[in-house]
Image (cartoon, rainbow, N blue to C red; front, side, top):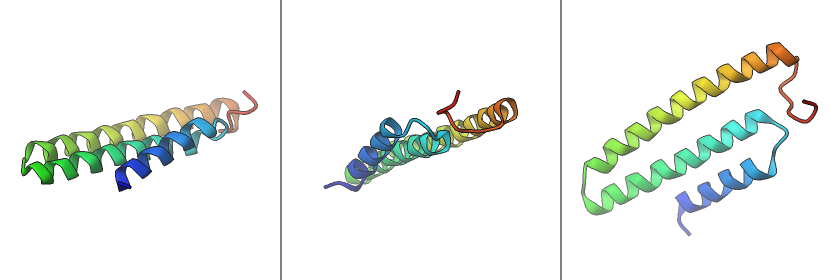
Amino acid sequence: MNLSFILFIIGILGFTLNRKNILVMIFCIEIVLLSITLLILISSINFDDILGQTYAIYVILLAAAESAIGLGILVAYYRLRGSISLANS
């Protein structure tokens, strides 16, 4: 099986099965974006095209921005509620 497919499945399952811990949900979104980036890079190498590598850099930048915004929201949520658990909200 392809490594990117395995990472994608792990990310989706982690996101859907764990609805109590928001940190794990953010990590699972990052794993999904990593698997997509890996798939873009592999196809870019197979087709001998530089455009796929450019798209991969854009996806990495998108993942970094998503992490920064998500962790900022997480800090604001912690200051408001006193806990990051989603089970008691």
